[in-house]
Image 1: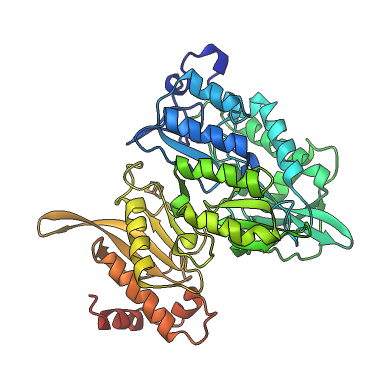
Image 2 (image 1 turned 90 degrees about the vertical axis):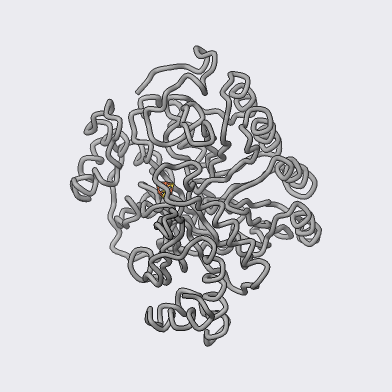
Length: 487
Ligand code: SF4
């Protein structure tokens, strides 16, 4: 790991080679359209002042694409950055630049409705702050893998339990007390922790990892892989040496909430008389004009705070109930949407071939073209998850989708053509393959027909696309699509 202080560097964003694979604020991570800058936002919570500074940063230092992107860890990303010390000083002035040595560690995640969720068992924001302070004050943690990731789930209506984190603390109630159920790599351990024990456990696991891994290696193993090889009981036995308390296993079974739908649209908060509104972004994208206007909106109607979600959307909290329709109108005037049924609410795409050499297709442009086409031809009354991925690594989304579109290339009439392999339903990894290759031009028509058939043939309006499609064979689905003239 390099040792360098931002104060010693004239041009930090330009000078630091990226020894890692993930973008950060202090690493020059090159992409096809220039250097990517990723700003960690613990919990995804931003003040309106910070929102304006990020908009200034994209305007003054971004490349030709002046947009700001919300990532699937609730970071902010700006593309094509030309590194200057002034850029970094701008962000540091509002607390948005962390510590170079630990900047590669993944953003700490919590439910974007922490503290305002009607059903939550505990407000996890203070734990995120404590962990962030711990990480920033322990530069030796710079030896951790960039995949090292921690989430706190408060047990409310908007869950982050299924997000891909190496360590997840999921709040549960046992008798009358609140504990955190420990998950490692998404697997339940049945270890229950008191809230004040969580940071100790992260520190112990980090210590265990650093003791066993060669930190000079460029490609370090994931913590969850190391622990899987070791086995859970051995891992816990060794971690125990670094803990001032005993790890206790619960004999009770806890069912964890995995719902995420309540992060979009208007919902009452636990604070009487107030609601939050979740706003749908097209593939996480916000232009600087929208950012400046959102900053003004949260100053006028909210608490001068905006929250980023791990589903690449945003939330405005603390709106008085009587102002909800007015705020919704302002959101629409900005060209944004707030309905959970909007096509963008369930559309995800990885970076694609504009930023990633592994991608067979321009996933983002193809996803936006599909969304535009579907908006003109169909109205959804229930969200349908559509996932574009440029290769099978599936960086943008790790859960099950209703429709997965895997980038592919084919020679047609001596011309290299880009297209997609289409999978549907929840079975297997991406679902079942219904087409091995549909080119970009045909794709919107095929997906439209699929959604039209679903709306027509489902028994009940509340039947999800996944539930519906899983009932039929691939031949039946292809037959219906072909009946619409699609081959
Ligand atoms: S899923 Fe594949 S193509 Fe897409 S960003 Fe990840 S590695 Fe690149």
